[in-house]
Image 1 (cartoon, rainbow, N blue to C red):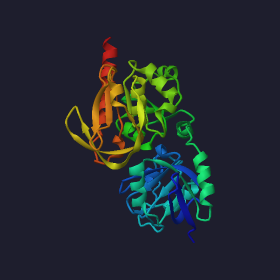
Image 2: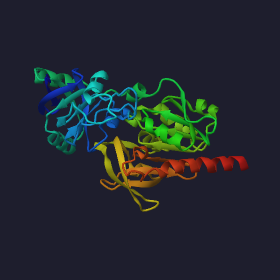
Image 3: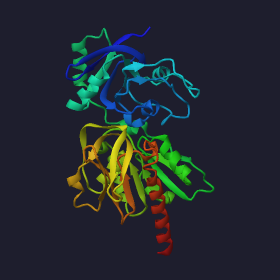
Image 4: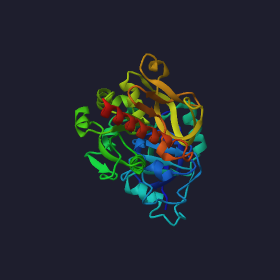
Length: 367
């Protein structure tokens, strides 16, 4: 039988519902996601480390979990809040229920709550700390513990690979890409491999010297959780690699590249999380429907005076969604082209990276 649980927000707001997944108490950063499908990819996205996600679409769990659809083999999200949880999925690809996977990876679930109220609260007052706990827990005592709790700043080191590994066809690869894993989604590596790249994935704190010794054709910086200011080692590495190889960054990688050029980042009120964010490509005047998941953005005023050019803007709030330095063959986007919400609106970015590597190789050969 489902156990009564509740969520307590740092301002004292309390909502009660039914528990599923892990029975553990969790202190979290509370955010919301507007996607209608894709809860498995959301659950297994390392960028949600230490967070609990409020799903605005009401029915979650109805198609279960498929073994081929994980973005990481070990999900690190802390909690999932839904209006209605389905524990009897109907899908021929299903190998487990959502609740079973959440219990396996210690992810707390809460269903039967007013997710519209929670989403409006986050939208109006911003992302906040919260605690998911048993209904019997004393609210004041839990609130005192929540007030004293600080969001950990080790998220990237927690989810990054600990050892170097390879992916893609090594023998017939057109390009060799070193991918810095800050909490990378698996589909990014799959997309690069599909384009004919051999990918060497390295930990987040790999030095520029180690990467240079690999003699790659290009460097990629992945998405990941938390504040870009917490991964100064990666920023320093990229700063030292600029001008030596073509570089492509996604999400956190976009923020790291911007900071490496001297720009600043700031925390958004409630972030961008969903599969329907419209972004304008300023170079082509085309609109892309994008998948997003981030709490931080690049300060537009801080871009001035750097070699960076703004290439993409979010049409919902005019935040920066892409930058490039054509001279250095460096570019990045804040959204996820590998997630295919458009479905193929942004896939050209991988081709752009390949073209940069091709041009770079030709210039080096003729130098």
